[in-house]
Amino acid sequence: MNPITFLIDNWDLYWPGFVRLFQAANLAFVFAMIVGVIIASFRVSPIPPLQRFAAFYVTIFRNTPLLIIFFLFFFGLPKLGFTFTPFTSTVIVMSLYTGAYLSETVRSGINSVDTGQAEAARAIGLKFSEVLSDVVIPQALRTVVGPIGNLYIANAKNTVIGTTIGLFVETTAAQRLANSTGLPIAAYAAAAIFFVVWLLIAAQVFTSIEQRVAIKR
Amino acid sequence: MSSVLTEDLGPRGQRRVQIANWISLIVIVALIAFVISRIAATGNFAPELYEQFTDFDEGWTQFVIAGLGNTIKAALIAMVFATVIGFILALARIAKNPVSRVLARVYIDVFRSIPLLLLILFGFFGIQQFFDISQLTGLVIGLTLYNSAVLAEIFRAGILSLSSGQSEAAYSLGMTYWQAMQLVILPQAVRRMVPAIVAQLATLTKDTSLGFVIGYEEALRRAGALAQAPPSNQLQAFVFAGILYFIVIFALSRIARRLEVRSRKRYGAAKLEGGAGLEDIDALGEEADEDELAEREQEPAVSA
Image (cartoon, rainbow over all chains, first blue to last red; front, side):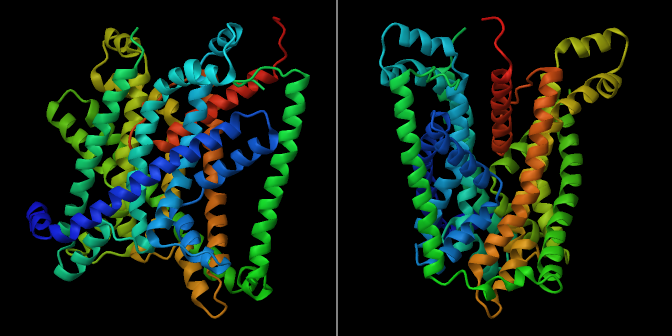
């Protein structure tokens, strides 16, 4: 069966799943930005314990399979007396995981700004907050837009793993339909259509932002 | 201390750093103490919960050897297929023939934007409609579809990163397209991309854990099965599975980082264009930047 007609026939099941996924992924990405900036500022701070903590955090989250982090959070933490709903768990896990990647991107963005820029800013008497907000961040942002766009896409795709702990996303809908109709190919292809459309649009948006902020030389 | 933001601190700044040092240390220690006290209070330090992981006769053969063995088996098979198909796709993507270019581009863009979980479900349940395939085959198909698309972009970036003088020189010697590719372009491009390829293979190993969803008996599923048995120790089992995976993935990503730093010294920084699925490779470049920075710091400043 054609996946597009399949999608239209089963729209009532797919659409709520997609909306849920969209909410979880975007919410997680916003929190991941916050986590990323905090961890990155730990990493560039002159305080050794914070640097170590940030490095440890990034290493752990980058080198452990996401599925295991999900399981630890959803099945492991209740054993310690903390219980969260699947939606909350997904948002928290995704923001911690994507935050680890974002912190690296933010840090390398800050480091990509020439030291002379900040020195010059200090020399003309700008305060630390002014150096950061008027000189360093505007320049750092330009190099960082591309990688952040990639992380947005990766985050969106990874959020689907929430289905394994019982979050109802469109992949869950596809799994149920594959079982009930016996047409797994159409069911999964229909779920994939959402991603191809969503992420192609997201990629376009990020590319145009990147072009807009690029330094014209 | 050579972040852009800070310079050498004066006496007042140093005092502040000292204070912040102590405060953050206390907070971190308090956090660790809290976690440990939670684990103790809920009885999760009970020794019988850990017995399975120290039982080298049964627990280890069932869980560690078999589970991790299955993980590595699936990862290795998928690596071979993904690398070969990715390589062919990259060649098709830059070929002169417009049909092959468009087809390769569609393949790469589509499979990079579909979540791997979906591809694995598709690879197993979809193909099971026609052929009776095992979970291993389904997992390998899913991993290969996704990673071949990502690796194709890596190979392509490597080829494009070479100066056009290389191919021009080859053509002016009278080489054909394929001769130039084989003798001049590919040897250099592949060598340059080895670190990125290894980093992607680390990601592939990480993603092997998704075989769980189709019932492939990798380390995580074995751990879950172990935790189902009487001493219900899901927390401990998943932590243990996480450590197993961590060791393998961390080793691979360390190797990638070493290679990246070394190849930068030789060929200069070949900046990769990132893209969907390349987040670990972005991170690899960033880490190597940091290593370079640290190395520069260690060198005594003579010129000043």
